[in-house]
Length: 267
Ligand SMILES: NC(=O)c1ccc[n+]([C@@H]2O[C@H](COP(=O)([O-])OP(=O)(O)OC[C@H]3O[C@@H](n4cnc5c(N)ncnc54)[C@H](O)[C@@H]3O)[C@@H](O)[C@H]2O)c1
Ligand SMILES: [Zn+2]
Image (cartoon, rainbow, N blue to C red; front, top):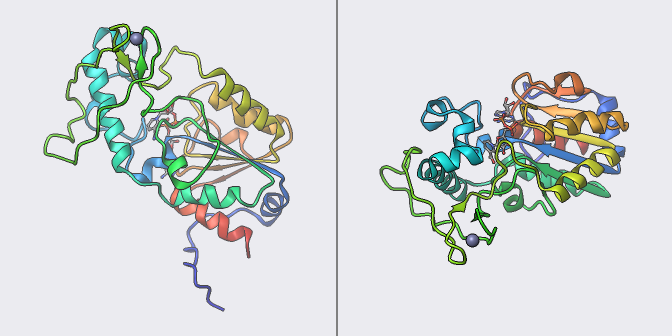
């Protein structure tokens, strides 16, 4: 009988039956996501972005305390551009499938390295953010929160990620406002990291979606989950450093593979 939902195209990779059964019987699902889950929302990943600023500057120039101090207007302008990109974007079927999956389990923990808010806007709750948020700027000096500038409708020139914008000054202490993300060389938020590590050790299944597995300590979570007995399943169109750690890899994009996985769990 034909279902009313879209049939899964034959080329979407699927899990073998025993692994699907483990997903059905699991109590605690942990979903670890990286930039790849937001790619189909139009947010470029680090490594896929071969154009514009991302290819002209070293990541460390744009995403480190030293880079910000050396060139605050370049770095702030880049984050203002990234924030606007996210505000104008929408969650995709991958983010939505994570919400659908979470409803099946007694416990579900979403851990993200992303600095966008697309998981939350799709409906995920209690997301553990390991790398901060584009929306949560704060003062360099006194850490007081500061709003991001309002996002204007797309205008000619907005596509230029290289526009220099002087960062605002903190009204309390006069220091510069900085982006609310974790930069290279900075510590992750201790509470979120500890909760993510605890969740990894308690997981029955960990789904690893759209992360290159190069940025530590987040990249260590799949091995931690596996060592504690979890089934580890990866969704990524390309090989990653995490391939050897994962029991199964579904080679495809998040917006195709995750909805297919949701359908496969309810035959
Ligand atoms: N959306 C965001 O918030 C965003 C965007 C870019 C970079 N970052 C930051 O980049 C850092 C780098 O780590 P990372 O591992 O998250 O990103 P990454 O850019 O290093 O890797 C992205 C991964 O996603 C995969 N991918 C690409 N398209 C995909 C798709 N449609 N579906 C599934 N997977 C896909 C790639 O093959 C790659 O393995 C993180 O600290 C993160 O904060 C975040
Ligand atoms: Zn201040």
